[in-house]
Length: 176
Image (cartoon, rainbow, N blue to C red; front, side):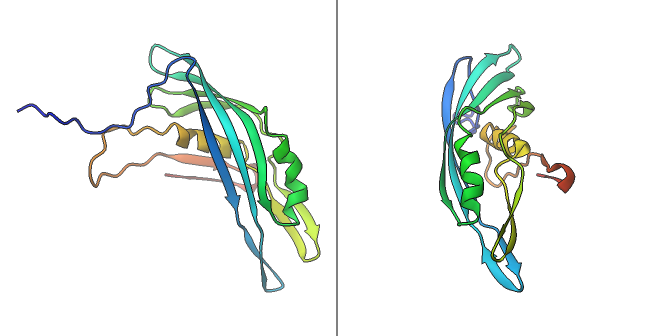
């Protein structure tokens, strides 16, 4: 008998010149101890990006541009605020170029984020480190943005996608 109900499949159907926006809220709440006392830091910022499909190839792969249109510091503790407020204000205009496979995997990621590196600064209680999203962080977000399952959704089914992150001299991680 014919199956009248096809399985649900999450599929991007983008074509050249398609545009969409993404709002991202980044929240960091690191906790560290100084002389046994817990110190909680807070950083939250919002970014709005425009994604534009620049090219769709015959095999279904895409060339996409991501441009940060807007960024705002929402909340920060008194040590973090003066260090990162300027870097967040400089984010708009930053552009990334992505190449996506027909399966929507990020195969190439180009672009540089201004001031992404960790910064150490002193305060009355000691030293603290903080940073914005780095290049690999942006690549991870692009991969999550264009996520597409390889097969239809099925009750109880499991899936995974490999991801990696390189922090340069601080090390790296890979996982699923």
